[in-house]
Image 1: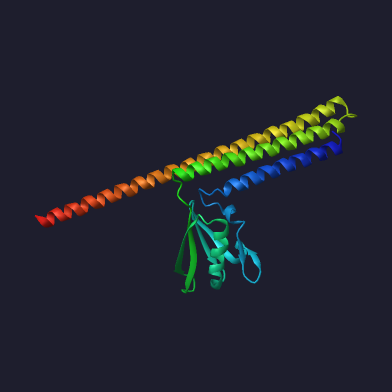
Image 2: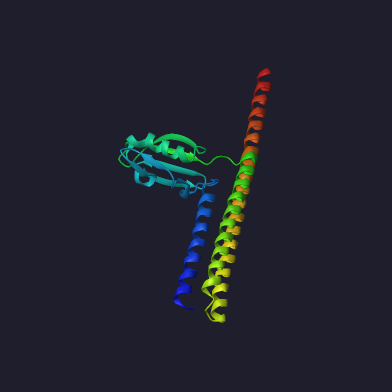
Length: 224
């Protein structure tokens, strides 16, 4: 295959990859778990505008929490405001701990929001909408590239033309498959989050019932 066709195919592959990257990024911002990429849009306003990682240390203690410690303690409120702008749904707690020189150090502890039934339905709907939009972009780009090749391949040997068509078709098919897999993984993650929520609710209800039984038992003993 000549260099010009190879370059066209490479550009096409890069465009398809770009659409998939955008789709994946949007899905990660539908936070069920604590995805570090979800903090990328956060900007911190001080004497200028900074990325979060420039002004704070980002830790992920587990799958569902972030610990954000400002590098300068005076910037704590600015960090909180910057994160709130992009993810107001995160549950926030301000905490204090001793640092390595035994001084009080304030940080912000974020918990991902519960995936109750309403949020599960919303996340599923939004994920599917993003997926549909991604597929539409892939379809449009493939149709556009196919149209371009109609002209480019006019004076190219048949075997070379077929090879070029097969190359972009394979890229297109693989891109659609990857988009489908990303959606499948996200829907599974959402469902896992919902099941986790149900388990926590059951545990809370059981604990409340046990506390009630204990309190009732203590009261009966006292009355006797």
